[in-house]
Length: 322
Length: 100
Image (cartoon, rainbow over all chains, first blue to last red):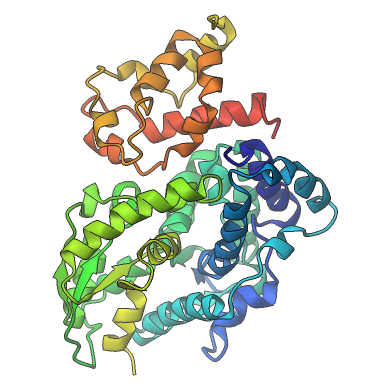
């Protein structure tokens, strides 16, 4: 028996309304990636993480528990979890992350900020004030909760004098660039992915030579929603990597299965395995570059240890940074 | 048995988001769908256009199984906003069934 959809969505939406994120994590955990980077607080241009990379270790842990109760009678009791979660943060107990995952995803955002700094981009960060974009509520069709969150984010940006945001993941990019303008009158925030920002800086050149074949896994959202297709390839090529393409690529990329993982974990895993096979077929001892935290988690899970899969920033930082 | 729900037809017809009337029933969307679920998305939209609310609701699982990956939309020659249409149905279920 699948998980009770209404209760699972309800739990996440309750969190979003009450705790301003679908998976509440300690604020200090969400911002600790910036330690040591001396990024100023606020500013007209800010890096906006939407906590997507930081949330992933907690989501991985939660999904693992969901898998245990999927097809079990315990699934019927999710409504009780939702009831108690309204009073205290039950989701924190079911999503205790692995330290290695926390470290891995934190490092990715750190690397992205490091690349931007190295390229001479001036930006600030909203630290504890930064909010989740609401992307999961939007995808699940919970429009009222999403709209509330989108307005909270816009107000936050206006209150802090932000006019340009540099995003680090495709989902936050899509929400802030293409969806918010459809529901917020007068929305006037310029939104760019860090990949677009870096690719546009011609004199941002590598300082180390790298020799490796990298198979590119395009995110559906970057490729088909936001047309971010050439930029990651330009950057990898500029870095010195040899690019390999899987059978389904660019605008016809194959989904990683991640978007349905919170409700249908097993089915999501099957889609991920199908994609991993395509990536393996294209990769000859090289590695796979993802550009979305959800893709990375889904593909790593589906591949086991059989394939080197890393976020694109991990490859770029080796070539462009000290 | 299922019965046509005129209110559902009206909601679908007046929605700014749901544009499955443009569908030419070629079936390419189903053929390229990585989920390999026969109902997605063409038949599902047909139920919605016909006002068969019961048929739509009994396939709630399928509606949430859609990845919103837009592989179908990329291949659609009739410019149907498939992902947005699926989101419309989810929004309907969220409000009418889950009361969210």
